[in-house]
Image (cartoon, rainbow, N blue to C red; front, side, top):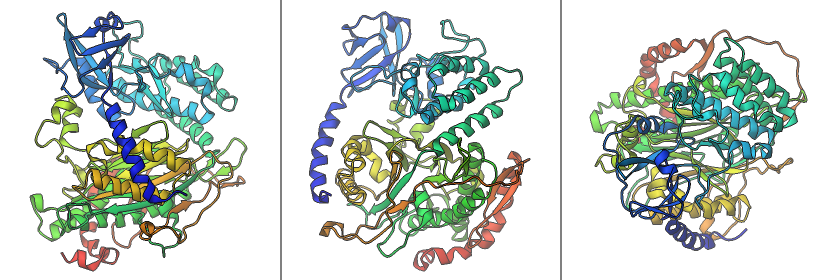
Length: 623
């Protein structure tokens, strides 16, 4: 291993160069007028036409023009901002010859301004897991795009572009539009027909099941639920056949301008702690709000309470004979967040904290769900590689490989709210003095006001999962520095613990205005027989003496199939935890019943909140 001291100088130089290279900003120009512009010409003395509809902004430091009136198409992009992993964003407009040309950013273009390959071009190269995962993402987008009248965007293989694991839309195609790619009231049958074009090159292990699924999608009265259930089962079946090794380490720094640390992250292990399976599956970063006498209490209370409830959730999931669908697990995790929110809110009420004195915390959480999955061979794997990301506030999650850095979460702040409501372009919203103010946080209000974002991902490639507070991500720091660390970590040129310490120190140099925290998980699926590393004291240079030991999850376990009775779930399940020492209860429920039970537990929370004393340091609870 190289020493930690060599890393900051190396990364500083690279990050500066990369930041300068980002001055080139490629855009996608929408419409017939843009299509007719010849490559090599310059539009409005600013935009260079590189190829059909691909323009280079030569003045990215200058704000683009904004629409005189927000058009229907621009507003549709804005309303789909929560799906920015897959959908482009509005950059601005260019007025040329009396026309107003809509310009998009966050488009599937390489750093050289070339379109990323279409799904039709790379389909044959994908593994069985990745092929199913691409289709799953299209199915996930079907409902939100249909509701806004742009489901046709998913029906042309040339419109669906690929960057590694994720699909990206080239642009939105309106249903009942005037183009050859538009469909009149598209249905799941139309989606199946677009998939059938790909099936001749599907991997043999999934080809028959995908063919049967496409046939079902074209049947009369087929439901979305039926399709998603079958496709999800196929996805987990393929993912579970992959090995999985995860090494985790967390660290936090007070920063150069703060006297105390209101961040809390998990795991944050000491050298004396032993292997903890929960910390190998659950990672959390919370950024407290409310000052020294409130913010750190709220963040610690949130982390401690979430651990208890997740333990109960994992215990119950492990005993389920059927696969639980992702939307149900998302409901459970959202319910957990609301329960913890009410614990903090009850603490505020008990201390008569009002308005801005109320303590709260952001949350970004990642949880690997180890459901039992029956493989094609008949064996049972204990991990389908499901990764659930939960966030409230502006702490973030990123997925990083040597090729790309994907922000998995969307901030809950005023600027994003204005975009999501279709009222302002993002760059315009950033000019507001309150643009960075949070629109929601845990503990500031009752749980029924809270709307946590929960989404499932599948770990099917080697990569780094980064959870961090805004002290780490501010000023585009992650986006500017990720490449310098990803390759070094993924190729084992630097230890995970050394890289985390260096990355955090570098963030403190570049930002330093706030507490900074990071939890880094190194996920590996490429090794068929991964080596199991347990936490241990390690001997390094003086700079590493205070670093915690990493936590490593064991490899995926495959066990012989057992005979067991099948229990049909006639209703959904919800995990309700009264707080304190209670580990929670698992209830059969319906979608409406969940919200009713959440409301009915408020008095239980208030009566039991004092039992949390044993989990949070006494000196903090007395404040």
